Amino acid sequence: MLDPRLHPVPPYSALIFDCDGTLVDSAAANEKAWQQALADHGVDLTPEWYQARTGLSADALLTALETETGEPLDRQAVRAAALDAFAWLVDTVLPHAPVAAIARANHGRVPMAVASGGARVSVEASLRTTGLHPLFAAIVTKDDVQHGKPAPDIYLLAAQRLGVRPAECVAYEDTDEGVAAALTAGMRVIDVRPALPRPQAGLIG
Image (tube, rainbow, N blue to C red):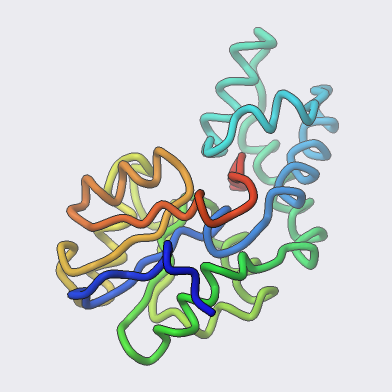
């Protein structure tokens, strides 16, 4: 049975989903990937520190670490190491069943897209691992835009690629930054957090 809290209310012409924390539960894989990548650069990332910073992009997470430690990081190297570590952990990623059920129920009825602040390689790997990839006509990530969430760019581009006006889209999100991005794009938003066990953190990429 579909969770009524997640039902899109007509009229709508398209559905657009965030990935990490919304469509998929990648929290454990993301945390382990960051821990491994940062350990190689002499940084001990504790679960308590990491889990308190839900919704942060990779750049924001690294900025917070640099501010706290007072030491600069080789961001390109750390992100590359995190992506590599995530690739080995992606098989542990699972779909968030209530949200995935909404996507499956609407597949073939309206066009759907993914709009993620993560890196394309990790987003597509997560969607393939969970079997959700074929549901979506477009996948937009931070690699496709100049400004990530909370800027609206990712959502605007997703609507454009679906050929639908933003006002006709319903977006699914799990972070304040993502909700702000979709609202600024002119979309209605369903916050999935009340229907899921916990928020996500620290996007890879």
